[in-house]
Image (cartoon, rainbow, N blue to C red; front, top):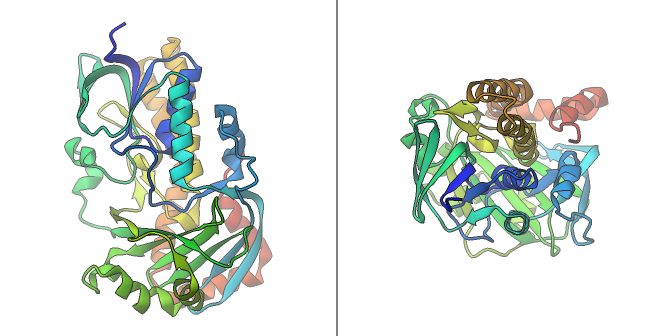
Length: 376
């Protein structure tokens, strides 16, 4: 067999890409995965996995029963002025850093026979004569199927002329992440709103907490890109964030940051490339669990690919069925996410909304349920 030829090539080694690669290996389908960074590495992410994904991850070979991984069963949400909503999570989740999670999944993938090309940048993807050519810093590779899993943004989006890269309307967001030591409950995920953004904090392994926030890029522009000044002037107007930013011990020398995030729907299939996770659409953290969405999309795509390689689907049918699935399964969440971003632009409206949710439990239950899917 040609060492540079595979049945499936996956570009991007985040959760969607890694879990799909492992499923391909379990099905006996040859697979290569490209990741531009070297495992293990940190990534801007809320680092909370809903229990809807737990059984799935354990089937792949990941042990989430370690005592140091906190079980998260409660949710606290605050308005910019400090009004607090408290809610018990029916499903709940587990806290684990992407540094640990992605690294362990990459080891499982390698052990099962996936060719993991980390520290490898992909320059171009071409569809020629019914197969793909992936040009990378470690050479050119061919595959029958190519999956895009490079996340929220990539130069490949522009290279492939994806329609959303040409859109000038809509807001761009900035994501910032820290790991901190703090005196907080281990079983609670907290989401604190501020002007044009919100910040989550929850426990991960080694008694640390992930503190990660999303903000309108205009907030940062007002302070000429100075993150600290923005945090002091905007985030710390929320009394909870003022306390956490003032009293926590910050463990990174510099914050992790990702810019030019756009909340919204993208095409799930473009140029015959099948998109998974954030590559197919970004959601706001408050409107659903993006990590579980990524893994669910890989789970469903795995089923379609098994049908394709067993000759039950043509390429055209594969692309059509997967695109239809993505829209029917996730588009509502993405639209709700876009609505939520508009809501958070209005500080007074955010205060009112949280006050209403705090008072009416049946509405609160429906909203929380809409952010979590059923176990798969």
